Image 1: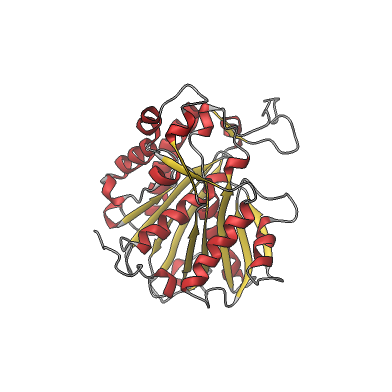
Image 2 (image 1 turned 135 degrees about the horizontal axis):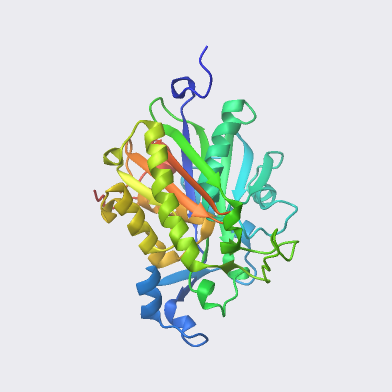
Amino acid sequence: MRGMSDPAARPSLGITALGMYVPDRVVPNAEFEARMDTNADWIESRTGIRERRFAAPEQFTSDVGVMAVRDMLRRDPQALQGVDAIICATVSPDALMPSTAALIGMQVGLVGAAAFDLSTACSGFVYGLSVAQGLIMSGAARRVLVVGAEALSKIVDQDDRNTAILFGDGAGAAVIGPVPAGYGFQEFVMGADGNGGSSLYLRCVAPTLPGGFDMGHSVGMNGREVFKFAVRVLGESGAQVLAKSGLTSADVDWVIPHQANVRIIEAAMDRFGLPMERAVVNLDRYGNTSSATVPMALHEAVQDGRVQDGQQLLLIAFGGGLSWVAGTMKWWGGAPSLKPAPHAGVSA
């Protein structure tokens, strides 16, 4: 009897609904010129970011997460039917307890569903997809709501040029459940290395990391080290998951990467031997929304008709930990919220 580790024995599971939300407030690069040594052109040339969104003073991570789920329900009122578990990937939770996942569930009619937060920073949403698949395969859940949501503007020092210019707020939500045979998730590769913890961090209880590294009081980052790590690990994990799936780069229709820096994405695409035109990029408008970047990019590419039924996707991300994740999936576009928006222009 074949085990569930055998791909041929696994049920076909994938994304059955999608939603997205970004706050109303647009923050262009020019806003940073008045209070720090930088300018709009420098920011865009170094990162690819032109603007990002900030949550309103009364908006927090659960609020943006709920709005992403409601966007999904607006296009598919039955999207949450059968959902009995919620995962919220976030590094900016409303509270350590109750979980942000539970707060989201309370507001979208999923009281009683299992709910927990997942903290691997920018890798979180794709980590969550793999965890959701495992919950369903084990019989612990039937369908899982995975939300990547952040209110990073609340935890970033807005006077720190190393971080303030990079991060924005937003959320993406997906329901994971059965899809037709031949579609859905294929393989995942995940990992983390705590030795890189001092390169990207946010203090909670302990003032220092093991070894004595002082974390300060807001998001901290060694940009040079994170850049080198990201370029290496995106290429390596992407190659590993393609090999594990029996695929090559030539089989990939779209790469959905974490949106941290356009130079990192360009380097990863070069490692795959793929043109930038095959990467979904929206960081110019939203910046780095951490765990929300991958679902937001996927949602936009589905809505505008780029990602189409039957296409091969490669999802790659890196984040605090330092963590990394890559996943492959054959896209199923048969559900109401997975269809292009009316009058969307389809581009190859």
